[in-house]
Image (cartoon, rainbow, N blue to C red):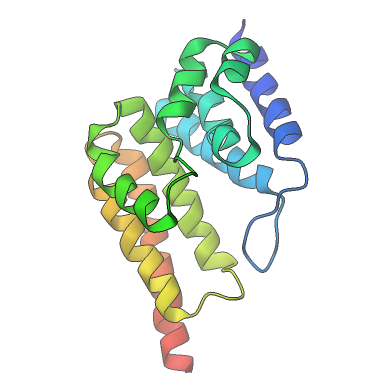
Length: 185
């Protein structure tokens, strides 16, 4: 399968599998916007050199949030894409606090390719937190999310300097927004 075909097929499937899902922020953007941003960050960070990685970035939440199976991803794409998606998937059967702790613990143990997806995912999430936070998140919740994201990313560092700089810029923007919110209170 050509690079263009693989990546556009991933975009199409992600749009189908996540149809109707929205981001948590007040803008309630279509969830596929997040997936596209993560894939774009990974593509930029790798110079587009790894189409399976870009496709996996586009599909990174398919198992976790859309109920798609590893086998379905392997059938539609290939085992490498499916394995990458599985590697970045949280086990939703676990309590949220356990899942979050496991992300911190397991981050350094992931493959470099999975680390790139996680870095891009956390960067996208922080960008969304700065631009359109969930309406029900107070200052403490936002600050706690930022702290947790930084702890996850601490275990991902050394993977891709460009992605790390994008994460750091997003974290700095969240800090700026939180400081402004604190001053306004």
